[in-house]
Length: 222
Length: 76
Image (cartoon, each protein chain N blue to C red):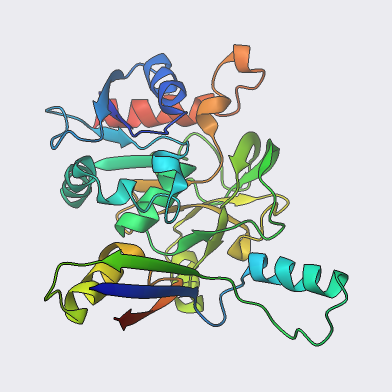
C-alpha cells in the first residue's frame, strides 16, 4: 500500500506523518508542492500539519491553490483516499474537498496539549479499529481549529454519519464539538488533532497507532 | 490602476478577534462600542484595463473564503 505525503514550505509534521504511515507498513514517498503529479499507484495522500506558506492570507489558502493540490483533487475525485491532520484539514476545506471552514479558536489562544477525542463513527477506514463512543487521547496544536459550517451543512454531516471524531471537552469553540469530518464517499478525512504525534511509544502515547494500523490493513486488503 | 478588496467575516460568523478588540476598547475606558468586526484590506496594483469582473474572480478563487467571508471591491 502506497502513501504520499505532500511537503509545503512551512509544513512541520510531514516527517511525523510519513513515519507513522511507514511504521504501519506503508511504502511512503514525499512529494514537493510544486510537483504536478502524484507518484503512480498512490492509495492515500497525507496532507501534513504545520503552517504552509506561513498561514498567509488564510490558513491553507495558498497551499490549496498549489500545483500538487490539483493532482490531490483529481486523486480524490477518482475515489482515492486523503488524510489531512491540522493544517491538512484547513487545506482540505480550502480546496472544497471538505465542507465548512476553520476559524480562529474561540479563546484566541494557540492551544497545544493532549485532549480526549471521542470516536463518532467506526464506519471509515480511518476509524474502523475503534468502536463508536471510544475515547482516545490525541494531541492538538493549533490556533485556527474552530470548525464552522452553516446549520444545514452541520445537520447533513450528522445525518450522513460523517463526523469522524468529536472533542470530549471542546477546546476551541468548534461547532457541535467537531474535531474531524469525512467526505461524502468517506475516503477523505480532515482532523484537527494529530494522531501521527501519538503513534510511537517514544512519543509517550500510542493512542493514534491503531488509526494508522487499521487504515493500512484496510487499504492493503482492498 | 489599483483595486482595493475589503474582506470581512460574514454576519453571523463569530469573530473572536473583533470581540477581543471590543473588550480591550472597553478596558481603555471607551464607552459605547457596541460591536467590533475585524477584517482585512488587500490592495492590488493592476495592469491598465483589468476589469472588476477579473478582480471578482480573484476574490472567489483566492482572496476570500466565501464559506465564511464576504468581500467588497473598490476600483480606483
